[in-house]
Length: 309
Ligand code: PSU
Ligand code: MN
Image 1 (spheres, protein in one colour):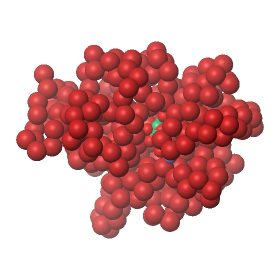
Image 2 (image 1 turned 180 degrees about the vertical axis):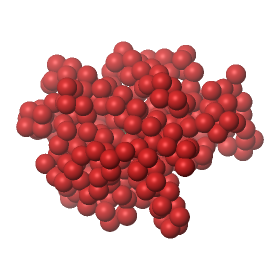
Image 3 (image 1 turned 30 degrees about the vertical axis):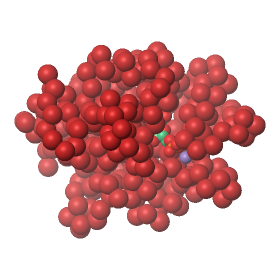
């Protein structure tokens, strides 16, 4: 059902992705850290399955990416997704350690940065996630800036998100992206979204009204020889949002808890997301699932538009 294509890099494409590549069908990459470190079971499994089916409904093919026992998988089958959703020992892989997991035959989930690297390697140019990592609040002290931002500056993949996670310092995250030359495009809104909320209170650097316009913009960048990715921000649907003023109260508490427990490095984002799940009685998870589904739909539309050109 699956087929290895390279004797050097241990990479395996799912049957569905292999077939899609053969007929040049649109493909949407999906990350796996959101499954292993971003949501509790069984919500994570429900989300992983529903985003795949949404992408198929739009006429594209999903490729969930992960490292399993030292093999880079582009596209997972149902059993592999379920196993990943249930396990607690997967590594959280970024640019720094995705190759480590391959070399040492480990199992790990890919973050936005690592998924972009794998997608680009597999010839996939559109990727859907929930929210990217960014500049953490207090980064002037901790230096905690997600490798996702640097990756957007160098790897040519369109990343569809609901904005940076609102636990971050959003103004600093936008400044960093501007410095690295990453276009930040909000879909169909002048306001830059903040993950669980439709607005961050900041204007979006750029706005485009349709998947076709987004695809066209990326093509124009390629024509100019501009390297790097694009961040598409897709505001969470109104019916699913948690208003910003309300969310800020919970975020403030979660940040205090993280500080008290001296959480650092890779553990910061998973800790805050889990803390917010409890502080909001599970509402943050419901919103998170809804926004990822919304992003999967838009990403599939962009992938279809990229193919139509
Ligand atoms: N989107 C979500 N939930 C998540 C993530 C994204 O809705 O958990 C993950 C992505 O894998 C992203 C990571 O790359 O959070 C950011 O981690 P850090 O801040 O440590 O770079
Ligand atoms: Mn970090």
